[in-house]
Amino acid sequence: MVIEMLYFAWVREAIGVGQERVDPPESVATVAQLIDWLAGRSEGHSGAFADRGRLRAAVDQVFVALDAPLGTPREVAIFPPVTGG
Image 1 (cartoon, rainbow, N blue to C red):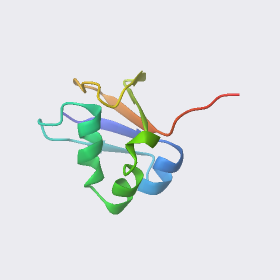
Image 2: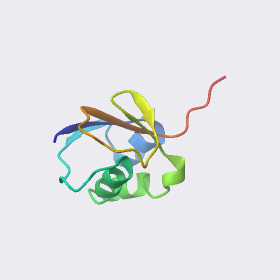
Image 3: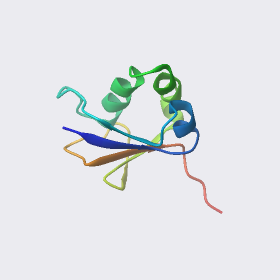
């Protein structure tokens, strides 16, 4: 399953790219497991995903909890908490 990953704000800065296409193993079944798998891709990924409490996610443009089932998404976005004003 190929997923278009989108990264925003300091997550993007830590990883060094705003988006990438990834093909995680079939054993990756939740957003948290995807993040764990991504953390092994580079030092930038590892640093960006070190503190899960500072991350939010959206699957196909719908906000989800990190323990949400992944399903077969076309797109997963990872970003810091959003504040408005």
